[in-house]
Length: 140
Ligand SMILES: [Mg+2]
Image (tube, rainbow, N blue to C red; front, side, top):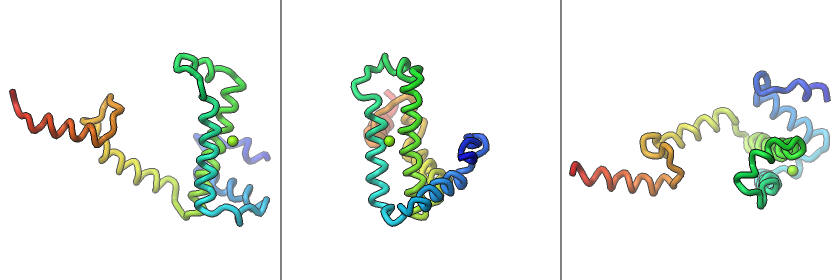
């Protein structure tokens, strides 16, 4: 399809992507199968296919995997499957993607204050407890 060849992160809006997904679904009359639960399940199935590309790959092998043309293409295709279904779920559930992502990012900023979590992957509850403990100690 000519329109999809012109897509790029620089110029394509989320609204356009949502419309293209909706057109794909409508052309196949698949909307009747796309309730929020089943689309959420499909997202997980596709996320599993994405993970399968990394199954048993050692950490030091990941750069070579990403440089392998065929594997890189497959990674893009599985990522696209996840994104397509996420856009579909947003449409089915009546969610504005940009507004929803923006709100969640703000919530995550509050949940993971950079002064507490910077450079640390541990769960925020553990880090907050540690931070409170350190604040309670006072000066030595
Ligand atoms: Mg797939």
